[in-house]
Image 1: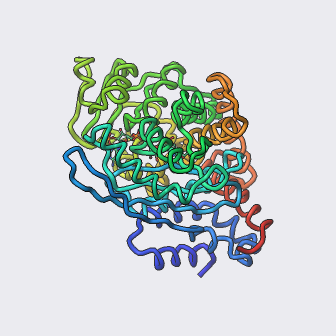
Image 2: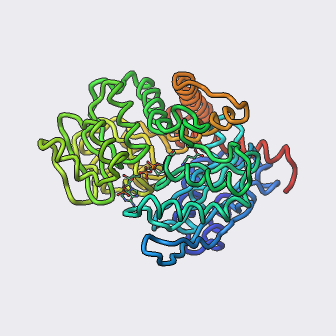
Image 3: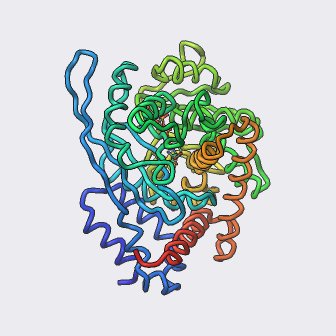
Length: 443
Ligand code: NDP
Ligand code: 2IT
């Protein structure tokens, strides 16, 4: 067995039941196989063996009290994967589907995504199987305070800086930050995605979605195309989806679909993003409500299967939301580009199909790196005790996304597969992390 096969086998054997983690390792290492195996130093120094095992996994009980005074328990995680490039950095996910395998897949991906940003951040992820849906603000606060009571022992501005992900937005980050401050008596940059009212970075909220569109615009420009007059299908209706939609519209596109876990909407005249913001950000309601704002739009109470006429697909909900059957729908409907806003939204077989059909493919670790890039800018802003403007932060984000695109595009060229951004991203990121690990000795 060659090196990559042995590593994949080891991951499968030693991490039983962690399907998402298996998938992330296979999807990251397979495109970089030839490169890694032809440079024996990686095998000689056991770089992959060290990369697939997190530095540490912290799993804890979270006890909180609901509105009726009933005591509830959940599980919490923080998995600190690799800090070769900087303090551990990555989001927190609150969703009932969270388990060790999900947090490990996200943490593993985060190492390489963070490397692509070119900023000094290592990789980590955390979260809980807590379901924030239908909970009152008070219950969310009670949960967040309990979660942070344990998490606070393991994080710090130079150690590990969490942020948001699914189910964790500005409200949750505020409650988590408040509890950290209470416990430690320090107001420091220990979390990113904070409100701009207390040290948050203007533009962090918009950064993942805007960054995704900045990246996709570069990918389209490379085939002499753009968002102008295109139909865009988006999944999800959360933080990433909303701001991807907003930027796509600013670039002259029409967004025709959005979704949540109950169903999806289709508005052939173009979805009104202000209505979606009101439904999702203000009222915290279901996307179904959109048809009360736009009676001409349609709502489907089913899984979104991407069977819609569109030019560009931006999956922005969750992992494995584009399977082979969905990819076939996109191909049949003639899309020209797919850029991943969510983490691992496209399964490996579906990616192969998309690429074989000549569709431009922007992999998550590059395409959605805008969020964590702006988080790293928020860390700088906090350490400098300064406050940047929205335009300053947004311009920096735009430049970072262009650089990520250029770096992975150059890598794909160097390895003889121009526009294979999956290969470019995985090799470029791996080289950076491995180089730092080698320089820091065996540990
Ligand atoms: P949000 O919680 O704000 O929104 C998530 C959206 O996806 C919601 O509309 C949600 O619907 C839907 N969704 C979540 N899980 C499922 C599911 N199992 N099936 C169908 N729909 C689902 O999260 P974000 O927008 O922050 O995150 C979306 C994706 O982007 C995730 O993959 C995340 O890891 C990734 N990401 C996020 C970044 C960030 O900065 N926030 C940065 C980089 C990547 P419902 O409300 O019904 O649950
Ligand atoms: O997947 C991701 O990159 C995030 N959820 C954002 C992480 C961060 O630290 O901003």
